[in-house]
Length: 263
Figure 1 (cartoon, one colour):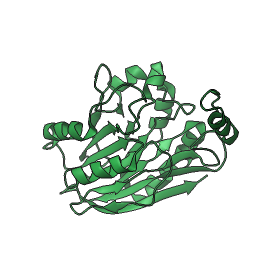
Figure 2 (spheres, rainbow, N blue to C red):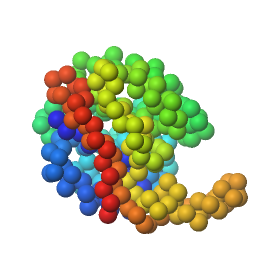
Figure 3 (cartoon, rainbow, N blue to C red):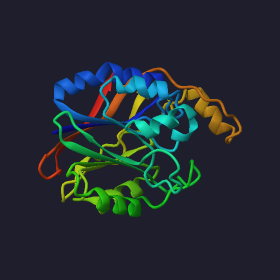
């Protein structure tokens, strides 16, 4: 089966890229399951209920979020009722869920696990436990339910992402990184069959500073954090992600290919 993982959707430009390209990609590649990171889908900060409903119309099966998911109150009821995941390793699990099992278009169950890193991330949102220990505990719980297990690690540090991938090699289908908004060219299949990429990239405006208007971003840096302006950029809109061909029986990855489509 073919699985598409879409990098962080940033604002209206990112949503427009998904609307333009996703159905074409599904038909062209025979994609059976789509996950997308939506941590910046609503104006660059989190996701709202209306934006979530819009994106589900474009044939996304499961959405993962990240540290910005807490910034839009309207999404909180959807975290309980829809396949929209907050990080599983949240210490105080007072709302939402960090994993789900959803049937693919072929009817095969697919598990999606959403984790948040700790390196350089402890000051971004609620406190998290170790993603390594959290993954261990959850895999013991769901390991017999399906062979196809997808992990989105929302994290800053490449080393943390790679370490988790090696730690889970052979136990999950893929470990894909999100959050840094720059697509890496290190996609590979690890020795025991787990697909990996350090960052899926960003689905949004690339004539920007990771999605932000360039002038606004520079002002924020020059002011050393005192200037709080925020504006989503508009130009050079792309959809980025990773296409994974998966053996249905074993859950192991067969091939990986980076995706980049320009509007």
